[in-house]
Image (tube, helix red, strand yellow):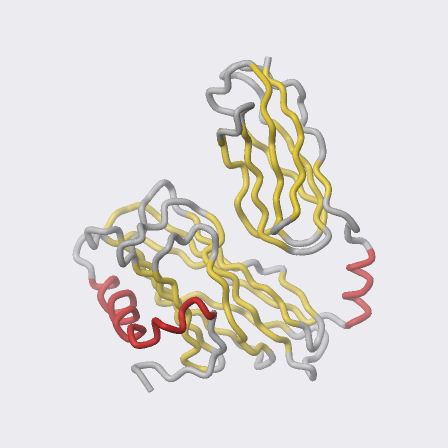
Amino acid sequence: MGLFYSTRIKSKSFRLLRPFHWVIFIVVILILPKTVFSRQTTVTVSISDTLKGAPGDTIAIPVRLNHPAEKISALGAVITTDGGFLKYLLFTKGPIVPGTLLDIEASRPDSLRLAFVDFGGGPIIQSGVLATLYFQIASNAVAGATSILALDVLSAADSLGTSFKVIGINGKVTVMTRVAVAEKQENLPVEFALSQNYPNPVRASALNPAVTIRFQIPASSLITLKVYGLLGQEVATILNDWRSAGSHEVNWQPQNLTKGIYFYRLQAGTIARTKKLAVN
């Protein structure tokens, strides 16, 4: 049975790691909050409060991690739900998590335990989507009902065991009628599109204004937006995060760009679009 009882459906990547679950949760949940030394650096774990779905829908819920240039070697959190209409199905690991261990246990129908530990694959070094949780809304859920996804028992530390201050921003799921969902979908983009940046060309100056890039996606997805040089070398990552279906805009402040031609590439899964960016 292990230390924690679980009835969840798990990501296949972690099935071989089940015997070690009790070790992970003891390290992250019990040891980290008791660390003697701590930093003033604040780490934020957040879930969107604008999530919506109709009865019977399966919804994807990204859990985001934001931290200012720190290396996180261990992270723990408990996520609870209320309302009684959400059923946890599975999770997928986010792109910011290196080849180390991230696991999520459904200890109760309304409670999940999340744990990340660096067992040699490297710490988390960037902000973005930590994991995406998949829940099913009960078929008998009432339109207008809400469920709060509350983050609690938060802890994080570096490789030396020095803990960080961790803040949780709770999420919310609202049940919509099937008609409301259909009307919302009618207004969504029907194609994956990337617009030309503005201003264009961009000035090679420390005083240059922020570059605005607009794009639209027909379905919620993990989005990456990167800038490359003429030889294909990666120059900058503008976006690496989950975005819902619709039209979006990002502002990017270029740093240390020399005059020349660059390319920015928007990718979601196997779909990608590329535009040219000139610097003079």
